[in-house]
Image (cartoon, rainbow, N blue to C red; front, side):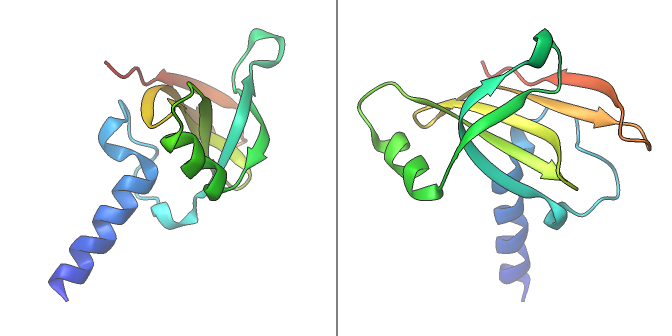
Length: 118
């Protein structure tokens, strides 16, 4: 039972990238309510946050990109209640940067955290 619990916790941490986040998503919120999506494109509407991710791809395409010898970028978006709360940019299999968003109770963006990878 203990090994199963450790495995589940490890999987959750890998999925949300918790080890590379500079700020926790939120306190006392379970991570199993996140939706994770993958995209080829990202823009900042009117040069503002939150980012807009587009050209959604499936996990098979992500796997192809990770193994590719060409330099290809993609984005991983983390959503809670259809609101983007975090995204990471990858080039092939290497995370290069990301942002985490904090919203108030009304859904207004109140803080932006940049998660640089060194």
